[in-house]
Image 1 (cartoon, one colour):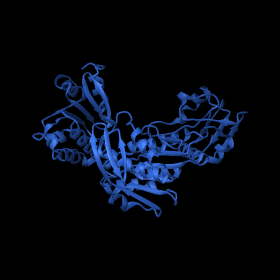
Image 2 (cartoon, one colour):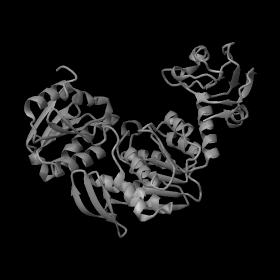
Image 3 (cartoon, rainbow, N blue to C red):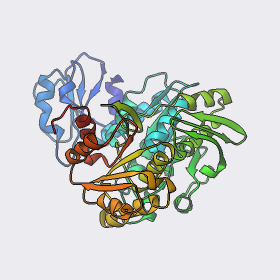
Length: 446
């Protein structure tokens, strides 16, 4: 987005320390590697970096000027704007953009399923409206600002995914997003290592309504823990899987009836059906036709590493390894072993569970051992915590083995799996399960 100098000052309250340019419109850049002539460099800061250390590099690369929070700046900069906090300035510029374009804003959060739900909502809403969304899972403050700053001028609906690792983070994003609709997919045990309890997780997710417009709508999974912490006096809609009558389940397909109307998804999994109920509700609130909502659900496709089906070296592989927490692992694995013949599951450690790590990994095994299809399943685990899952299933599953690393489990698969098997990968991102894919493809030597 182009900003006039007076808009930059209006949005951020910046003090002009220098202005020796004839340029009237400026793009904002936060990355010195991507600077183009005429841009204003906005240096961001984090635990391990400080963008103000690269002011000279930005100007040398062609930046017309820069924001600063200190007193020093490059002599070569033609425009210098001083603010107290550059991160806050970025959020303020994003909010200025939000107000100027003025789309309907849908904010989405949850312990699991928020990226999937955001993508399903986008698939539905974009059938009728010019819609912009958070890219992938770029759901922190920087990703939020990038989403708003890249929003086209003609955007009618903006869908913003909101992630968090602690208290106050979703409230901050809500403040600058000013949502018209807020969605919570669920409140499970993801990040319990940081927040300490399930109640604290629900409380942190509930921050999404802090700046929800009074005439807006809150939409959520029907969850008593969420309801406990929601302080919003406006319209509230709650949904649950049992509200849908599931008519058909098979690989890469689901068919169900919700509130008297039939819908289809070209993905499997009851959790995807539940996530789609939020999209249906939003479509109705935005006065969309039933046929458009139905087509939007049918058009939904998972993004990379979320139930990504691929044939590799003669094996059928489903890669769902972008991230994992106990709830998502239980849901996706149970769906897989119930729908696919000759299932092989490869499960890795789940992160950020803190002192609850052992018991929550064991809870996955305890959940799966009661599913009849488990007795026909090969269970392979990678890592010390995932071993807790295989220890529980030893004696219940068809075959169980734990491995120390991705290289070992890849070698086992290449030596023992065959064309009639389907392999399912699920782990936290830190386990780097893409290495298994690479090794099955022969891209890395074993």
